[in-house]
Image (tube, rainbow, N blue to C red):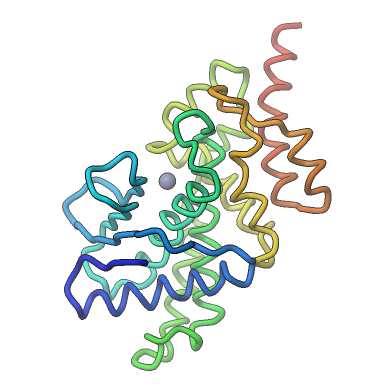
Length: 247
Ligand SMILES: [Zn+2]
């Protein structure tokens, strides 16, 4: 059950965006389940976040958005897509203390921000809030271009060695630019909802406490999935660079 801890008027807008995202995930065969999820908005916080039930004082998983206005649907869909993806990943594999590769999870969630912004523009008329603003999709299209114009550093792709890889891992939740170009590419590999379910299960492949996953098994289980292949390639390149440096 999703609870909206905000004024009724805002809750209706945020609910419409959540319903849109969950409808898309439903087409992928991914369901959020019945466990309680509380969605709040606090424009004063540093950045939006997802806190699983075990990690917060409330009796529910919590998503806190950072929106100056709930009328800002472009920012709203981006934040919700990112945090709901964290929530889905957690609910599919709740071992959030041992089975984490932050670099991979953040890149997946950032790619989903771009995917859902794109999908909202493409299917705007299917969203219940579109009746008041039928041409808002043009603005959304501009937002996508704007997001793709923001440069990243390619640091993950160019990563030289395990030490740098672990630096990227340690700062993954704060330093988006290290992986932003990679998130853009990952979003482009997500051409249909069916591509996404294996990404949401990446934790099943993580070596306990190691920040890396079993790329051989991950790829073998999903041989035709371009998104899985790209994520595996990113990790393999970083590890290969480590090997090259040592020899
Ligand atoms: Zn995140």
